[in-house]
Length: 199
Image 1 (cartoon, helix red, strand yellow):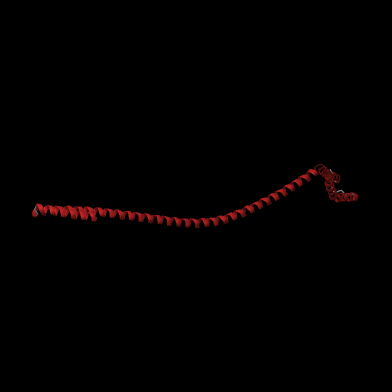
Image 2 (cartoon, rainbow, N blue to C red):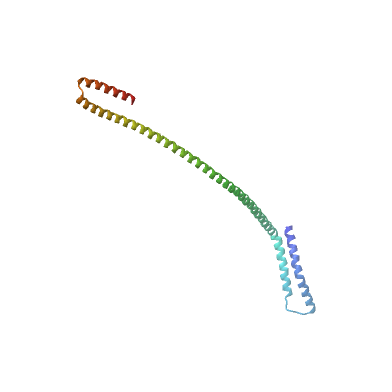
């Protein structure tokens, strides 16, 4: 109530101060007896009504107006503080993202270099395995060739022996008697046995 009166009294005083020159002017004009057609009584009543209205508003609504203005000021202060807090959080988040981005670029470069090293190692390992496999296949082929060559030689020798035996039989039959036949056969078979042991 006191706050409302303190607010209303200055407003009333201000309204009266603004109306005093008009009242004085009206009094001066009334003293000269001149009537300019200005309703001074009505003007005075309006001034009184205005002062009374301001006083009533000050008495009954002054505290609410003051509280509303204080609440509004507090809301504005909270909004400013919240805005400042959000700005600081945004700056901190931006700096964190910048740091993470810089770290990500460094990690990406490191990962790329590591991938190149691993690819080079893998390439070397593949080449080494391929070379070992080629060596193994070459050795297997050489063994197969040697085995087939040995078999072919044995087959050729057998054919040669069979031909020689056939030719010898034909000659023996034509030129040799029974005693010579037995002797030559023994010599021939002993020679074949020697060749077979050397093979």
